[in-house]
Length: 235
Image (tube, rainbow, N blue to C red; front, side, top):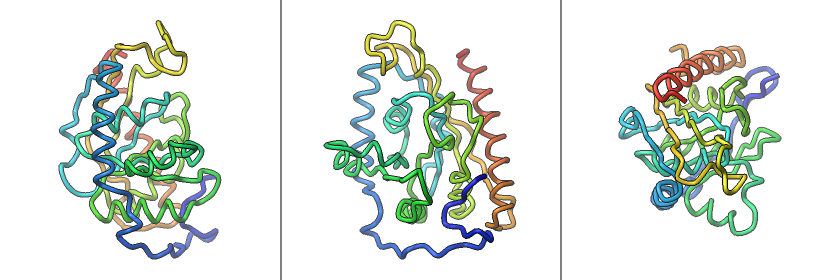
């Protein structure tokens, strides 16, 4: 069963904690993270970025990224035309990575429950016109958008922000790896941006059935983009 963040069992909306500007992730930090990502990604691999111009230059945007490898997030963060704040599992915020990820504007989320703090901060970020990065599959897997969690549709419908699908292809290539956890050094990784689209049906409804329908629409759009990206890149 899908669980929708910030919703009760009857599908009624649950109030979220109030937020202030101090609760928002750092935009300046995300820009620093983007610059670090540019250096690392282009230094270690050969990113080929297609369609980045499709990302709206201003206003709230949700980047929906397929996820088959650990470098997918850093890769998109580095090549994105705008500073991006990813929702990242709290397990990644360990040791020195905790202050680093927080400092570069990334959002910690507890995937085992509806994380009200993460939801509030993500919605605040979108309300402020920022870019939110989401792995809609919820975890690293086949990277084929075959199974989506409802969070992406919820954020899109609740905020009204358009979704830009992003396909990362080549990061899971195992041939010629020097380090097993990483793609082969200096190998090509394609990052393909798609056309922005709206998740809602235009009615503004946020009931469970409406969000289920929105999730199905989103999945069709993301799957179609991935297929197009594969044809475009030959991956």
